Length: 364
Ligand SMILES: [Zn+2]
Image (tube, rainbow, N blue to C red):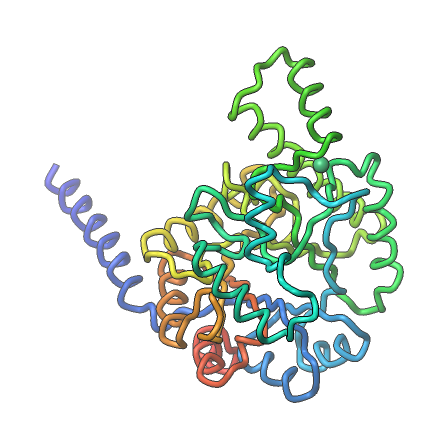
């Protein structure tokens, strides 16, 4: 009995010490992989990205692929965004919001700077979150209009678009990035075609028109589209790795990424607008620990939004803010990281933070 107690207390002490050690030794922890959404534009930026610890990077030309490869980074051939026969349709209030924050009412001849000043002010006033989790009842995507992919029957347009990308990919690329697979209003598309499909979905299952059923329908359409796109990529190019960021946010289920069979599934754990430590750590744990719940080959990648320009309404982070978040992600078990926008990684001072936590030269 005594031996048992002694052993038990040793185990408790050991576990306790290990937990403490983990907290204390965070300075020695590093990310093993860093995905950049910004391409290497020339020799100098390519070298900087590599020094900062970028391992995986988007490229838009053969020259950029050459630069990435030369500096030991994996290059991914451009970014696929959804296709469909028309743009998504939102409800009246959402459309009004979209037009307002994007300055659709402004004189098209207005100088670009002046226009941006006004739209940035409006976005701030409306607490617009740039496609991230909403903090108001109504928010919509900024600028980008996403095609209604649900209406792309048999993926005719989507496959054509993918073919154009895949057929131009130079030898040596590691795969492809995909983005903007989601809804402009964070909930669904209300074009005639989508609404007809939704009615059919309800009648086939003998369901009522409720918020839950609507959310389930649009979640299903979204996840199916992602996986159909990935299946098609893999069918054409089995060796291609698919890198994604779950964006824009799907309001009913922010962390839906583990339902998607991308090889590297980036999900937001730290948005441009600063989130509390508790949320960053909870999301990091979920993104990494539940990545394989549906598909065994998925790697869950914590995504961090970084904006280094304090003059726009997008959330701004100082290098110290970025470092604090990075340490929180590391402490929560994140060992890979995805960052947008990419060039922020190599901005002065921010570069030092990324090199410290992602750079290879100090790797132990
Ligand atoms: Zn639609």
